[in-house]
Image (tube, rainbow, N blue to C red):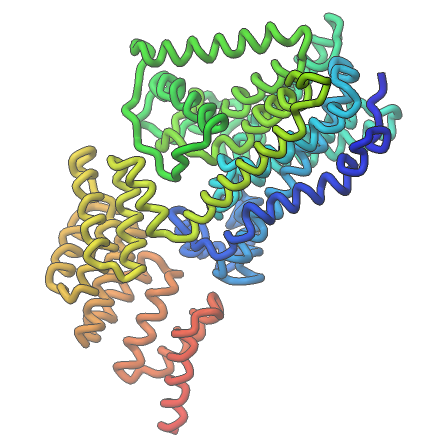
Length: 594
């Protein structure tokens, strides 16, 4: 049975392609329009604002070496910088555009699903047309998606999903095409989009299995064709492995390379990570159904083992859910596809590949495709009618979307105020040291110095209790608070103790930068110059160190070097008004001397 066109339904105008995309855009604008001024947070600083590969272009090869399977996303950050430097608005606009395109891909994919042999004619004509739009609206408006959209650096999660889902949509078009020419065109588009996804983030590696899942649940096969599909999926996985190994400079034939590339932590056993993820996956599912308590930095739960009853209970729940979905597949084949896709899409980050951070909401962005499809199926095809035959779905769908949109708007409102954002986070995860450290930094930037000091000391206390090691960046921020509170001796002593401990060059550079700032304010310009030069030795492209060294050179009469340093900073960040003013003063002083 052929799928009806949009114009054949009494809701045809609403459900046609242009109108559906307009609704997606409108939903995103209403829920995210106030996020353009959300400042950089957490990893945004290290990945963008403090990453010389972004603000001093060194070629695509350098970016490839820095992030082999994330290179396309980092290239977009570099392009954002070229167009608007460090103004967050430009980065947010790109994130919103990606979110819209991901929603459009969901819409296209769902339309293709409704044309597959096992789904064609399964719903009424109106429901068949409505399901893709409802799924796409759920995808773009759900508050659980905010972390992948409003948190700038998590363009990684949204961009890979955009390419991944678009590739799936093209695969369906190729699979359902009526001519060889169309199959080749759509197949080529699918392959290109898959490669773009693979070089956006590593979780694109599950794509061949997603294609296999489509074939297994939504198409009819005899034994020979099943073997062909399985062989093609296996070939796709081998291709993914070869590309990944070569991108990271490994040997595709080496078991050691496989082990190294499938672990981000040498201290977390694979079995313990998998066991820990069992209850975390239920947290993700709960947040989709009831998105209350969203926050960025989840507490680091203790690693679990499969000997614990809680893990077995969670695992049993997953097995039961999958079994129910598979059983429902005979009459409702979209259900097993949707449920199994959720677990498949979580396969990279919630299975046997240990990652130091155990839980993040942005990891659900792609898996939520399955839940949105499932929710749309229930809403447009699974709800009973009221007495008299009136459909209950339309008003319920509208009410649900409005509620989700309001929740998304409110969550984004919290993102706008860093202090409120991190206060909310530490309230929900009071044992997470990094959340306290981020709160302390936000309070210092808001000039709430005493409160910032207390938050940072709490972060230090938690780290000393849990691991015995303190993040040097917390020491940097604590020293900054002490300096602004005019407690320079305490700040310098704190920095000296931190420098006496082994740490990475980035942290040591920032400690020397802090020391130089205190020495500069005390008019100890010789010591300040030494500190700034040491910071630049450790981190050659540090803009704050260059700008502050320039100020030191100006104070000691080395105007030519000061001018050169100021100009270098402004080439990297033309929006730095303080440096522009300092450069103008230095040039004026040089003119008077002539």
